[in-house]
Amino acid sequence: DVKVTQSSRYLVKRTGEKVFLECVQDMDHENMFWYRQDPGLGLRLIYFSYDVKMKEKGDIPEGYSVSREKKERFSLILESASTNQTSMYLCASTRGLGAITDTQYFGPGTRLTVL
Amino acid sequence: AQSVTQLGSHVSVSEGALVLLRCNYSSSVPPYLFWYVQYPNQGLQLLLKYTSAATLVKGINGFEAEFKKSETSFHLTKPSAHMSDAAEYFCAVSGLTGGGNKLTFGTGTQLKVEL
Image 1 (tube, each protein chain N blue to C red):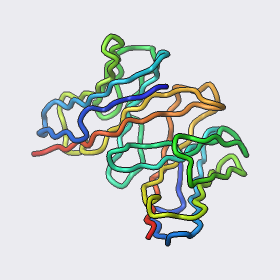
Image 2 (image 1 turned 90 degrees about the horizontal axis):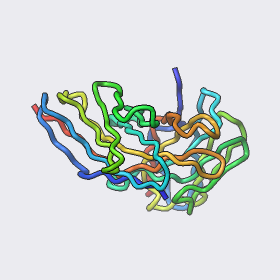
Image 3 (image 1 turned 90 degrees about the vertical axis):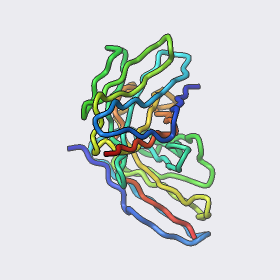
Image 4 (image 1 turned 180 degrees about the horizontal axis):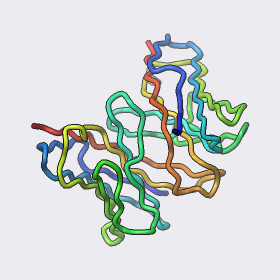
């Protein structure tokens, strides 16, 4: 059974803190994604990675960075958390280049609150 | 650029009634379209996808969707709603960018099923 796990379901941080969100997949997938989900806005792509150490900006990368040192792990970093980054964060993975019709598999999400 | 529009952020139906969730797409190339469902406090999971093999696509839990190029639509239907169908539904279009495929999501439709 395919699995994408995220390190925390709920997280509360203070403004200005550095925040790490971790995602791990066990399907040997090439591509991994970070989205944020906000009511009325759907899912918006923050960053994605199509290979180890490779990354590409999504639609809303400002205020975020990512790291992919190993194929199975993709980290989202908030360098200095702000209240407008309070959101649900979803990680997903899928097979490599050319698999345009492939299913994306999602983790359960991390609900981040920045106070 | 590709995009999808979901009409109706909230839809309410009675148990046993027809479910119709609307999705229209915009794409300059033949689109690959997806419907995902998100149950409360969970990540997204695939309901069904259109990959140009057949215009009527059947998915899990009795859902189906029909691709209509003339109407640029990919509406999701289910003949008889069940209480367990209450969830948020997202339409998405897939496209290649950089090194991999990415999904562009609609803003979601919250389905409520009433007794």
